[in-house]
Image (cartoon, rainbow over all chains, first blue to last red; front, top):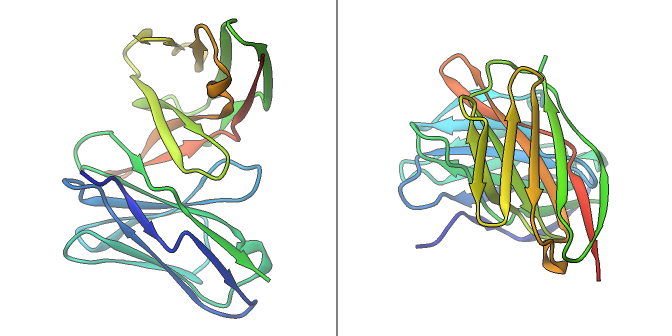
Length: 112
Length: 113
């Protein structure tokens, strides 16, 4: 049983560009959360998706948007990239009514 | 407000016990977690404790929760070099009907042979 799968594993983008990161949740999980982890920091909550809707959001600008598909997979989109967006982006999936979060290995985004 | 604090560094000798401490502010937290992150890797769930429990033991890991002081600790017995990693404390908080994890900055554990 595969856990949470994220793609790509690494990405280099130029300031001002747009990026899309992808996440496939663990089998049986229907809720997906995205976190940003800057170097030397703990993860920061970006948003959470359930039933294809954004259910709650952290303190991130509108440049960060997402989507959840009927198969529960999810995308994170970041527009107008800034140097400060360089980070490890982590996806976590969980079943709706329990507290078990499973994390993917993350996508390392570097903005130059 | 929501805040989780941890000491940033801990160094121990192989075979000793490690104790990593964490304090949190949200008294409504339901679950508290310990995650391990090795260099270049994602987050691995080590253990969690429900807020109505005081202690949980899982092999070499012991979690102690003092809800009155909002203090959580993780004890690793017989620490090995493979335990060297960053350990994150996280609390599960509610916002409406939804929950999210609030994280500390992580404690970097160095195990010396």
